[in-house]
Length: 326
Image (cartoon, rainbow, N blue to C red; front, side, top):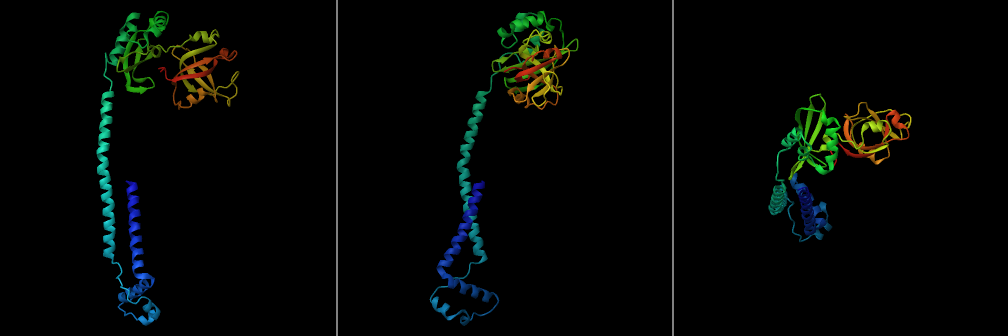
């Protein structure tokens, strides 16, 4: 519409220029001067004395047909005509364009309707409840993502880990369905009878939903006690809470080279310190988070010399923000 308005103003200026130029070409420069004198004289009730104008001027324009000056009414009519022309062109343009836009929007809406997933199986909350109520390995595997990949660690979690002694007290929905890197998911908070809590995520699509067991178990690729005593030098996948800190000492003394982070985890009794190089890809990922509170991350980490003795490790990779790995 802005282009149409600019075009209208340009057309209006063109009309005025054309009218002025055409009047000058009809009457000639001398005639315009004579008419200006005559017009001014008439406005003040005076008569024109041609002797004052000059003999040469009269002879030069002898026989020329004088036209009266354009009145205000005529000018307004010209402006109105130009505006009507501009509006008419815009109306025709919009009328021809509107049906195409309506058809395009209808096609998009039609595609969206066809693309809407058709839900299969139980709802996310039912899936969460059935997973928590299961008492055997086979029953639990029915309600988790990638059952073949998590079967071994699930068995260890319930046989040797905290899953064997934990008893569910209550479960509540954390929020409505959200969209993440892995798609749509429903989040729940599970409170155990001993007061501890676990996150239970149910990612879902048109084929149904399943519990992400690694997220629920806060799975780590290596046990924390093996990291703390130095038996394990590096890890591939650890789920932690991170927040900014400022402890620079021993293997990590240079604040210009390192960013210090305080890390906690459900199975970690006391916090540890992690350090990430400021010029590394991992630091660029961390900079996307404002860190207004402890934030869940899935990371990789390793020792630097004897740094484990002082509860210090280098953060080598950020796998994802959160515990739900895509």
